[in-house]
Each structure stands twice: as C-alpha cells, then as structure tokens.
Image 1 (cartoon, rainbow, N blue to C red):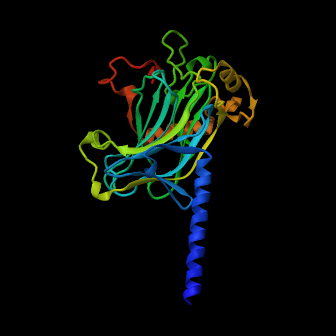
Image 2 (cartoon, rainbow, N blue to C red; image 1 turned 180 degrees about the vertical axis):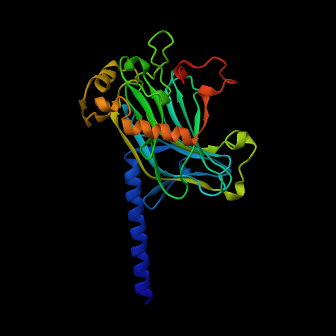
Image 3 (spheres, helix red, strand yellow; image 1 turned 90 degrees about the horizontal axis):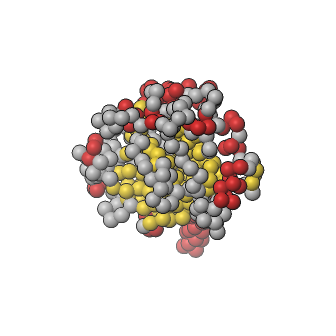
Length: 314
C-alpha cells in the first residue's frame, strides 16, 4: 500500500509539473516578466500577477508590433480590492511615446469595478474616460482588447466597443460615428492621432490607494493580501516589428503600414471594414456609453475650460 501511495503521489507531482510547463510555454511564447519576477506566478494553465505589501508585478510582450489587436482573458482581483489597480496596455518607448490604457480600479466589496481608459499621443495623456462594467469581472474571465490601425483605436470588452478614438484626417468624406469622440474637421484644429510607433503589450498590478478608489479616500486593506489578477490567455495579432530594427526604422513602418500581407499572413486589421465600426458595433458603443459611462474628460470643464479638439461637436 505504501508503494502504491508513493506511486500515486509521484504521478500527481508529474502531472502538476506538466501542467505548469504547459502554462509557462503558452505564456512564455508571448510575454515575459517586466519587474518583480517572483510576483508573476503560474497556477495550472493560468498566469497570475500578485500584489502584496512588498511589491506588485508586471509583464511585457516579447515582441513589439505596429497595428493589430492585443487582448487578454482576465479575471480581476476578487473581494475587497480598494486601492488596487490592474493595468493592461500598449505603449511605445521614449518621451514622445504613444500609449493605450485599460486600468481596472479596485473597489470595496460589493461596489462595481471602474474601468478607466486613456490615450497618450506623443507623450501627452489626460484623455481619461471611465465606465462601470455590466458584469462582475471577478467572477469569471472576460476579454479586454485594443484594436489599432491607421484609422482608429478601439477599446473593447467582450467584443463590445466601449471607446473609439478616430483618425480625423483619414475620415474625410466618410460616415462618422458621432458618439465616438471624433472630429470631422480637417483644419489646423484636427486632433492628433498616434503616429506609427511600434508598441509592446504590458500588464501590471500595483498599489494606487492615493487616487484609485473614491479619489484616494479608501485605502488598501493589506489584511486581504495577496491580491491577484488572473490571466487565462494573452494574445497579440499584429505586424511584428523586426527585433533588430530601431523604433523609427522607415522600412518597418513601410512594411507594416503599406502592405496587406506579411510574414504573419493577411493583415486583417487593415481591411476596409476595419477602418470604422460596423452599424452593430456603433449601436453597442452607444449603449455602453449611455448606460455605463461615468466620467468623460471631454465634458470636464474644470479640467479643460477649452474643449480638447478631439471632443469637438459632442
């Protein structure tokens, strides 16, 4: 009996090790730790980012890309997560960087998570919008994604657009979605659109109790630590930037911007139908913003007495 029990234990250990290797392989093809390596933890076929009183943690994609789609199947920190922020975002490098952010703002138990989106263009942000989600993001996995092409940046939750930032100069003569925050002007007041800078995909979890929950009035309760955000999958489908190329490599910009095909296959994100929302997606966007938008910088006259150009006409 002792020998049989030992055999079962060995099998269980081997199976557990195999599952760990499988999970590591699945994620290691796409991402690697960016800081606090010991706070990026594999659990079966899942990946967890952990926050405790000592540190948070994060990961970054192994490759950069120019245009495409990045998504994460993510389950957020359950229970009392006040003060905790989990981020999933795309960013280029340098002072004049572009960045597209999902920031999930933890809350006290029973209160809804707020999801803050933001865009940095040439190093300038201050374009925050917040929504409350129409489901419990801690109970199951949901997919959060950013679609990026020369015409638009689209933030999506389970394929529902919650925010669109359009390239106004590419919209001349096109039908426009009034609720998306675009501007049909093509004058000097035309809003900036992120230029072709290659981006990496990042995620991190950290303590932000100086601002994240009720403006910083509710602090992190460390008795609930460790706080863990759990990933089932991270996907990047885009034009992969050559590893030996500089971030301003003209040849790579031309390859990813001008071509419809590449080593990754067909660049579906550049198809004509991807240059703006479909009618169904436009209706989804209107619904999400009508029922779940709780803050929009475009109408915050205290912060912006002069309306930002991308907000004109709203």
